[in-house]
Image (cartoon, rainbow, N blue to C red; front, side):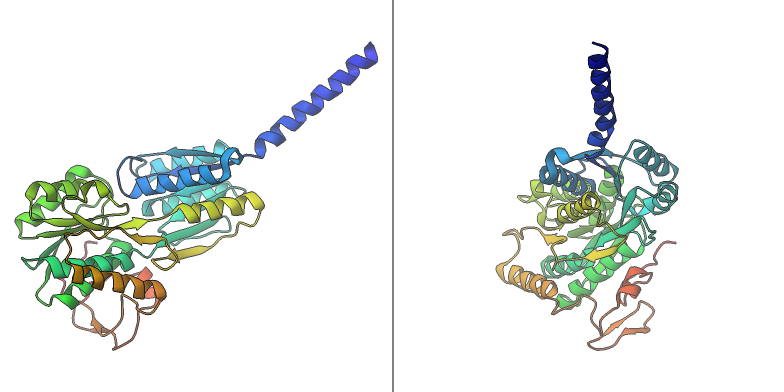
Length: 358
């Protein structure tokens, strides 16, 4: 009896020892969001990527997320707690999370971190972003053709190179098809604030804009366009298809799912390395939403041809001749912008009015 009791105790001890190991077999992946998962735009698409990870790996993964996390100290607190709670991989999905991500990563060298739209890396920190400016070229082409007032409104979020690139790209391509076009830009200094975004759209419409472009995260600008009537707009970050029978004529769609699946798999199989990824229309990270019948057939064909030429690498949206706003030369005839200049873009191109806020 005593021997049997000892044997049972040994088996129980082995089972207890094995339990943590079995639990650790499940890879824990965390996501930190700047807005709500129901924003219909930026955060919504990141959360679709999270769900794709769950669908791909099933019980082999556990995903967690925190939404509405302000950029700054709150972000560092949330990221730290995720690491303390056992996350193996953490995606931080807003530009202002860059320094908090780097700070937390230094304290948790065994955790892998992925920061969206930033540029600071570490041995356990990768960065990733999409070439949204490619989609802006397509939007600018449609907008330039369809404006009747020749005034296009642009709602800027935070004045960082990513947003400035988009404004420049949209303007260049609108101007190519409509030399009389004028851009009016309103900055809201936030990524997600439906009230401010709606107010910005209304101000632009009052100033004569009949096309609204946005680099903000909510559907509020499209709602304002619908209310105004005779104003068109575009989905931002997500298809925003609920407005396709109204003002929305197309969209830029951020497709994070393949990247999130690949990076999770790399952690699972031990091949994860710090990388810098910047993909666009060609690899599928940037999608162009359905161009509706509000867009004339010939304009739709031109936009789709532009999309195809960007995807194939035949055409670069920043191809000279292009001057800077101050009239100085930037790109000569046929010259294309290098990634370093684009990544740090802090100037408007010739023809845009106003100054970039500091």
